[in-house]
Length: 257
Image (cartoon, rainbow, N blue to C red; front, side, top):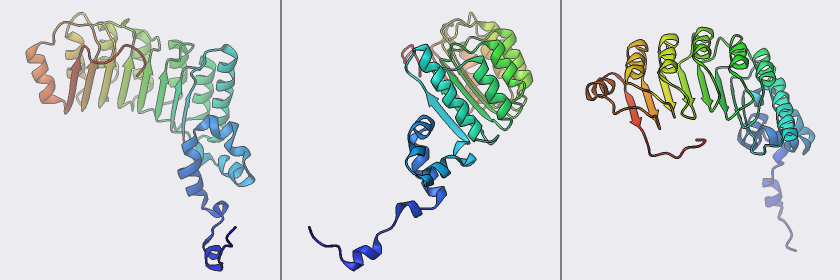
Protein backbone atom coordinates (compact mmCIF):
# COMPACT_ATOMS: atom_id res chain seq x y z
CA UNK A 1 0.00 0.00 0.00
CA UNK A 2 1.39 3.41 -0.91
CA UNK A 3 2.36 5.57 2.01
CA UNK A 4 0.68 8.93 2.58
CA UNK A 5 2.99 11.89 2.27
CA UNK A 6 3.38 14.47 5.01
CA UNK A 7 1.77 17.04 2.71
CA UNK A 8 -1.26 14.83 2.20
CA UNK A 9 -1.59 14.29 5.93
CA UNK A 10 -1.41 18.01 6.62
CA UNK A 11 -4.35 18.61 4.31
CA UNK A 12 -6.52 15.92 5.88
CA UNK A 13 -9.38 17.36 7.93
CA UNK A 14 -11.49 15.79 10.63
CA UNK A 15 -15.07 16.12 9.37
CA UNK A 16 -16.26 16.17 12.99
CA UNK A 17 -14.58 19.58 13.30
CA UNK A 18 -16.94 21.03 10.69
CA UNK A 19 -18.98 23.97 12.09
CA UNK A 20 -22.30 22.92 13.57
CA UNK A 21 -24.34 25.13 11.23
CA UNK A 22 -22.78 23.44 8.20
CA UNK A 23 -23.05 19.94 9.67
CA UNK A 24 -26.67 20.51 10.58
CA UNK A 25 -27.88 22.59 7.66
CA UNK A 26 -26.04 20.98 4.77
CA UNK A 27 -25.87 17.37 5.93
CA UNK A 28 -28.21 16.28 8.70
CA UNK A 29 -31.30 18.24 7.66
CA UNK A 30 -31.24 16.61 4.24
CA UNK A 31 -31.90 13.27 5.92
CA UNK A 32 -35.37 14.15 7.14
CA UNK A 33 -36.89 14.05 10.62
CA UNK A 34 -37.53 10.30 10.75
CA UNK A 35 -34.03 9.37 9.59
CA UNK A 36 -32.46 11.78 12.09
CA UNK A 37 -34.47 10.47 15.04
CA UNK A 38 -34.09 6.79 14.15
CA UNK A 39 -30.50 6.71 12.92
CA UNK A 40 -28.41 9.85 12.44
CA UNK A 41 -28.43 10.99 16.06
CA UNK A 42 -27.01 7.62 17.08
CA UNK A 43 -23.89 7.91 14.92
CA UNK A 44 -21.76 9.87 17.38
CA UNK A 45 -21.94 12.35 20.26
CA UNK A 46 -21.34 15.29 17.91
CA UNK A 47 -24.28 14.39 15.71
CA UNK A 48 -26.46 13.74 18.75
CA UNK A 49 -25.61 17.18 20.15
CA UNK A 50 -26.43 18.88 16.84
CA UNK A 51 -29.65 16.89 16.47
CA UNK A 52 -30.87 18.28 19.79
CA UNK A 53 -30.43 21.88 18.65
CA UNK A 54 -33.88 23.53 18.29
CA UNK A 55 -32.63 25.25 15.12
CA UNK A 56 -32.61 21.83 13.46
CA UNK A 57 -36.36 21.54 13.97
CA UNK A 58 -37.75 24.83 12.70
CA UNK A 59 -38.99 22.97 9.60
CA UNK A 60 -40.39 19.43 9.93
CA UNK A 61 -41.56 17.24 7.05
CA UNK A 62 -42.73 13.68 7.69
CA UNK A 63 -44.36 11.37 5.14
CA UNK A 64 -45.70 7.91 5.97
CA UNK A 65 -46.69 5.50 3.21
CA UNK A 66 -47.50 2.42 5.27
CA UNK A 67 -51.04 2.16 6.53
CA UNK A 68 -50.85 -0.32 9.40
CA UNK A 69 -52.33 1.28 12.52
CA UNK A 70 -49.33 0.37 14.68
CA UNK A 71 -46.93 2.15 12.31
CA UNK A 72 -49.20 5.21 12.33
CA UNK A 73 -48.69 5.33 16.09
CA UNK A 74 -44.91 5.13 15.65
CA UNK A 75 -44.87 8.00 13.17
CA UNK A 76 -47.09 10.12 15.39
CA UNK A 77 -44.71 9.50 18.29
CA UNK A 78 -41.72 10.50 16.14
CA UNK A 79 -43.52 13.65 15.02
CA UNK A 80 -44.17 14.65 18.63
CA UNK A 81 -40.49 14.10 19.42
CA UNK A 82 -39.49 16.37 16.55
CA UNK A 83 -41.94 19.07 17.64
CA UNK A 84 -40.70 18.80 21.23
CA UNK A 85 -37.11 19.33 20.11
CA UNK A 86 -38.05 22.55 18.35
CA UNK A 87 -38.63 24.12 21.80
CA UNK A 88 -41.35 26.36 20.39
CA UNK A 89 -39.28 27.52 17.39
CA UNK A 90 -41.20 25.44 14.80
CA UNK A 91 -42.40 27.61 11.90
CA UNK A 92 -43.21 25.06 9.16
CA UNK A 93 -44.59 21.52 9.40
CA UNK A 94 -45.83 19.08 6.75
CA UNK A 95 -47.51 15.77 7.58
CA UNK A 96 -48.55 13.18 5.02
CA UNK A 97 -50.56 9.95 5.37
CA UNK A 98 -50.82 9.91 9.16
CA UNK A 99 -51.88 12.07 12.08
CA UNK A 100 -54.80 12.53 14.44
CA UNK A 101 -56.59 15.35 16.21
CA UNK A 102 -54.43 14.58 19.24
CA UNK A 103 -51.21 15.12 17.24
CA UNK A 104 -52.52 18.37 15.78
CA UNK A 105 -53.49 19.52 19.25
CA UNK A 106 -49.97 18.78 20.51
CA UNK A 107 -48.40 20.69 17.61
CA UNK A 108 -50.59 23.74 18.23
CA UNK A 109 -49.85 23.78 21.96
CA UNK A 110 -46.08 23.62 21.39
CA UNK A 111 -45.72 25.82 18.31
CA UNK A 112 -47.17 29.30 18.73
CA UNK A 113 -44.80 30.64 16.04
CA UNK A 114 -46.05 28.25 13.34
CA UNK A 115 -46.55 30.09 10.04
CA UNK A 116 -47.07 27.15 7.64
CA UNK A 117 -49.14 23.99 8.12
CA UNK A 118 -49.53 21.33 5.43
CA UNK A 119 -51.77 18.29 5.93
CA UNK A 120 -51.92 15.72 3.11
CA UNK A 121 -54.18 12.68 3.28
CA UNK A 122 -54.46 12.92 7.06
CA UNK A 123 -57.77 11.09 7.11
CA UNK A 124 -58.00 10.84 10.91
CA UNK A 125 -57.81 14.59 11.39
CA UNK A 126 -61.31 16.08 11.60
CA UNK A 127 -62.57 19.55 10.85
CA UNK A 128 -63.27 20.01 14.55
CA UNK A 129 -59.71 18.96 15.47
CA UNK A 130 -58.27 21.31 12.87
CA UNK A 131 -60.32 24.25 14.10
CA UNK A 132 -59.43 23.67 17.75
CA UNK A 133 -55.74 23.64 16.82
CA UNK A 134 -55.95 26.76 14.66
CA UNK A 135 -57.35 28.73 17.59
CA UNK A 136 -53.78 28.67 18.96
CA UNK A 137 -52.05 29.36 15.66
CA UNK A 138 -52.84 33.01 15.06
CA UNK A 139 -49.54 33.56 13.22
CA UNK A 140 -50.39 31.05 10.49
CA UNK A 141 -49.82 32.48 7.01
CA UNK A 142 -49.94 29.35 4.83
CA UNK A 143 -52.39 26.46 5.08
CA UNK A 144 -52.47 23.47 2.71
CA UNK A 145 -55.19 20.83 3.06
CA UNK A 146 -55.28 17.80 0.78
CA UNK A 147 -58.13 15.31 1.14
CA UNK A 148 -59.09 16.53 4.59
CA UNK A 149 -62.83 16.74 5.23
CA UNK A 150 -63.91 20.23 6.18
CA UNK A 151 -67.34 21.85 6.04
CA UNK A 152 -68.46 25.39 5.29
CA UNK A 153 -68.49 26.25 9.00
CA UNK A 154 -64.95 24.84 9.36
CA UNK A 155 -63.69 27.17 6.65
CA UNK A 156 -65.32 30.13 8.35
CA UNK A 157 -63.63 29.23 11.66
CA UNK A 158 -60.27 28.93 9.88
CA UNK A 159 -60.66 32.41 8.44
CA UNK A 160 -61.68 33.83 11.81
CA UNK A 161 -58.80 32.18 13.73
CA UNK A 162 -56.09 32.92 11.15
CA UNK A 163 -56.30 36.64 10.36
CA UNK A 164 -52.81 36.64 8.82
CA UNK A 165 -53.55 33.83 6.35
CA UNK A 166 -52.06 34.71 2.97
CA UNK A 167 -51.97 31.38 1.15
CA UNK A 168 -54.64 28.66 1.16
CA UNK A 169 -54.60 25.43 -0.84
CA UNK A 170 -57.59 23.07 -0.81
CA UNK A 171 -57.49 19.74 -2.65
CA UNK A 172 -60.62 17.62 -2.47
CA UNK A 173 -62.32 14.52 -3.80
CA UNK A 174 -65.01 16.38 -5.75
CA UNK A 175 -67.18 16.79 -2.67
CA UNK A 176 -67.14 20.56 -2.27
CA UNK A 177 -69.63 22.99 -3.65
CA UNK A 178 -70.20 26.71 -4.16
CA UNK A 179 -70.81 27.19 -0.43
CA UNK A 180 -67.22 26.31 0.50
CA UNK A 181 -65.79 28.68 -2.10
CA UNK A 182 -68.04 31.49 -0.89
CA UNK A 183 -66.96 30.78 2.70
CA UNK A 184 -63.32 31.17 1.66
CA UNK A 185 -64.07 34.48 -0.03
CA UNK A 186 -66.06 35.79 2.93
CA UNK A 187 -63.69 34.74 5.72
CA UNK A 188 -60.21 35.09 4.18
CA UNK A 189 -59.96 38.63 2.79
CA UNK A 190 -56.17 38.78 3.28
CA UNK A 191 -55.47 35.92 0.86
CA UNK A 192 -52.76 36.51 -1.72
CA UNK A 193 -52.57 32.96 -3.08
CA UNK A 194 -55.45 30.50 -3.45
CA UNK A 195 -55.42 27.09 -5.09
CA UNK A 196 -58.49 24.88 -5.45
CA UNK A 197 -58.21 21.36 -6.87
CA UNK A 198 -61.02 18.86 -7.36
CA UNK A 199 -64.10 20.87 -6.42
CA UNK A 200 -67.64 20.89 -7.77
CA UNK A 201 -69.02 24.33 -8.55
CA UNK A 202 -72.45 24.70 -10.09
CA UNK A 203 -71.84 28.25 -11.26
CA UNK A 204 -69.12 30.87 -11.67
CA UNK A 205 -70.39 32.71 -8.60
CA UNK A 206 -67.70 31.24 -6.36
CA UNK A 207 -64.94 32.57 -8.59
CA UNK A 208 -66.65 35.96 -8.72
CA UNK A 209 -66.83 36.01 -4.91
CA UNK A 210 -63.12 35.19 -4.60
CA UNK A 211 -62.28 37.93 -7.09
CA UNK A 212 -64.44 40.54 -5.35
CA UNK A 213 -63.79 39.71 -1.68
CA UNK A 214 -60.06 38.97 -1.79
CA UNK A 215 -58.63 42.27 -3.12
CA UNK A 216 -55.00 41.33 -2.40
CA UNK A 217 -55.08 38.13 -4.45
CA UNK A 218 -51.96 37.69 -6.58
CA UNK A 219 -52.43 34.10 -7.75
CA UNK A 220 -55.52 31.98 -8.32
CA UNK A 221 -55.33 28.40 -9.55
CA UNK A 222 -58.38 26.23 -10.15
CA UNK A 223 -57.83 22.69 -11.45
CA UNK A 224 -59.80 19.50 -11.92
CA UNK A 225 -63.02 21.29 -10.96
CA UNK A 226 -66.43 20.32 -12.30
CA UNK A 227 -68.04 23.56 -13.38
CA UNK A 228 -69.42 25.00 -16.55
CA UNK A 229 -67.17 26.89 -18.94
CA UNK A 230 -65.79 30.01 -17.36
CA UNK A 231 -67.62 33.08 -18.57
CA UNK A 232 -65.47 34.92 -21.09
CA UNK A 233 -65.88 38.29 -19.38
CA UNK A 234 -65.11 36.82 -15.96
CA UNK A 235 -62.01 35.10 -17.27
CA UNK A 236 -60.83 38.37 -18.79
CA UNK A 237 -61.45 40.15 -15.49
CA UNK A 238 -59.47 37.50 -13.61
CA UNK A 239 -56.51 37.86 -15.94
CA UNK A 240 -56.60 41.64 -15.64
CA UNK A 241 -56.76 41.73 -11.85
CA UNK A 242 -54.71 38.68 -10.88
CA UNK A 243 -51.04 38.43 -11.69
CA UNK A 244 -51.12 34.61 -11.96
CA UNK A 245 -54.40 33.02 -13.02
CA UNK A 246 -54.79 29.35 -14.00
CA UNK A 247 -58.04 27.59 -14.79
CA UNK A 248 -57.94 23.95 -15.92
CA UNK A 249 -60.52 21.18 -15.75
CA UNK A 250 -58.18 18.42 -16.79
CA UNK A 251 -54.54 17.64 -17.39
CA UNK A 252 -53.64 16.16 -14.00
CA UNK A 253 -54.43 12.69 -12.64
CA UNK A 254 -56.83 12.18 -9.78
CA UNK A 255 -54.81 11.43 -6.67
CA UNK A 256 -52.29 13.03 -4.38
CA UNK A 257 -50.16 15.79 -5.83
